Amino acid sequence: MAGRTKKIIHFLLLTTIGGIFAFAGVKKALNPGEFASDISHYNILPWTACVLLSLFLPWLEIVCATALFSKKYRIAALLLISGMTLVFLVALISTLIRGLNISCGCFGSGDRGHAGLAIIRDSAILMAAGACWWLDDKGNETQSADRIPSSKKQ
Image (cartoon, rainbow, N blue to C red; front, side):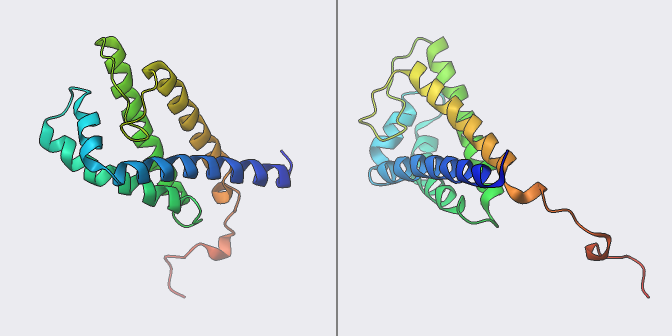
């Protein structure tokens, strides 16, 4: 893939993922009580855990969204975003298996989308995060022998 095209695709994917997570995080951070209620509707966690997650997860999403644009923290942010998305996918699939018809809570309590659509959306986010990791320049920098520290004293 041409260098310029690769950079444009990489930037667009990072911007899309970052925008989704920043928007979702802000919406949930503004109303943690509703988010705790949304989490509890999954019938997976006790209420105390739902409250703690509702206070922590939105800020993690916002921090990760911001960190995507820092070369130093990008891979860590992509790993955290992928992990959160994967856990959420498992929770969504479990609601379908158990026949629950709930709001996913992704973008606040007003989000009343179908779980199947949320699964498709989150699968796309996972693929985009993987593509960002693959397109990132982290693996394209070869280390020369003179940059590798030597254990021998001279």
